[in-house]
Length: 133
Image (cartoon, rainbow, N blue to C red):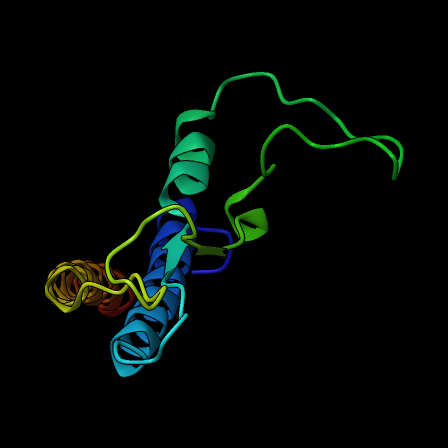
């Protein structure tokens, strides 16, 4: 499983979805806190770029002052927490819409479930190869 590209993508996707679940839960917990700015988790675009970059030439970073254009591998994708400041939902400065957060939770849960089923299927394939069936 180590070094398997698909397995690394599944692992990174589940990590990002778990963090999104925590952030969205925190948003819901602070739905009545005046001045609270909701947070969002972003990682799918970076992961998609890495997945679509196979076969493309990669820019090599040779100095610590160089800024990489994108993550070099799936392991380099880092889920980033973003504070959403430009949205206004209530007059007290809180921009958490509980209905939207519940929709995000449901979507995240479905995506996490799909990744869990994919991981289980991949493990079953490994098991059948190892057992020789």
